[in-house]
Amino acid sequence: MLVPVNAWALGDSGPPPLTPTRVLSAWTANPPVLLVVVLLAAAYLAGVHALRRRGETWPRARSLCFLVGGVGTIALVGLSVLGVYSGTLFWARALQNLLLVMFAPMFLALGAPLTLLRETLPRRARSVAGAVLHSRVARVLTFPPVVTLVLVVPPLVLYFSPLYEQTLRSSLVSGLVGVLLVFSGFVYYWSRLRVDPVPSPGSYLVTMWITLVEVMVDAALGIVLWLGPVIATGYYLGVGRSWGPDLRVDQDIGAGILWIGGDIIGLPFLATVAVRMSKEDEDSAVQIDAELDAAEVEEASAHEGAGDAEPTPARLWWEEVPELAERTRGHGA
Image (cartoon, rainbow, N blue to C red; front, side, top):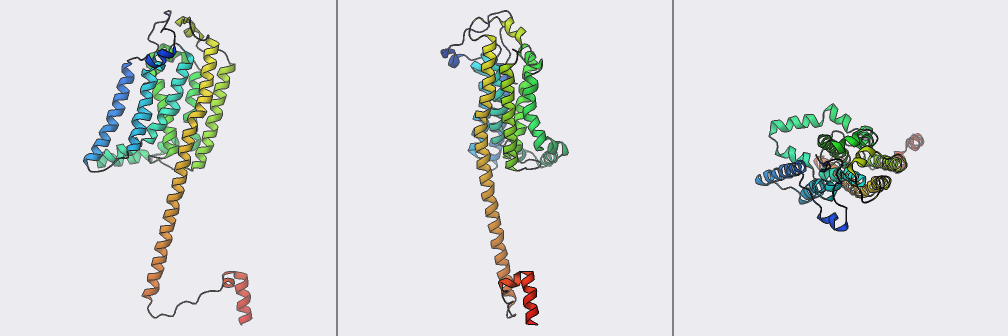
């Protein structure tokens, strides 16, 4: 889906040297990426349009998150300079994968696509979707320890197995890995941000702990790539790149991107979690106040309905304490 394979055959020199000008001017028309981007944007806009035809509204902020932050990032990853040089430079591929697993899914989840889908489905299909959402598989998949593994395991498997080199050599493998990265990231952000309904809402404090684990995994991944051997050496030597950093430095740069970049991307996520946690506390406080007000109104109505019945005398404070109340009753006797 989303990480295009090097368009140059092994043994060629690859794309021209990367210069500051080419950072902005190098673009590639990657048909699979274009297709995915168009389908995602068209499906989302069709859902929004269907709601508006029924006279309902859809928050503009959600649309911007999904289309600009989510779909826009996918397009940037596959069509920009990252797509051009992803098969030549390790750090370009590392930045691609980081954006696919952590950045794009966060904004896709903030766009509430599952809610939009539910609101536009026919009634019968909506009930089926609700059953799937609350199924045992969905609950297991969003259980905090499981969702942590869903987020952190794919990058580890990718970089510490032959799979990474296969993504460089096969467009099909590359696309499947891209889909997996986006899916794993979306499951994580969907279950943690809870903009869309989830099978079993958890505490935002648990989300903080999961984020801490993810930060440690990012650090471990970066350190191992930094200190460990160069991966996919055969492929990169076959490309025959004669410019830019050597293979060791190239991988060190990519390791730093995965380590530090992951922590930087985590900052807006933590800020969003803090805002949603604060809003949830405010909503809970408002609900409690409303329930107390309703109870007071009900009690007042009950007293009015009692008519001339003798009011219940107020109890003194010591009568509320069992030990003191027992003593006072004894003295009164």
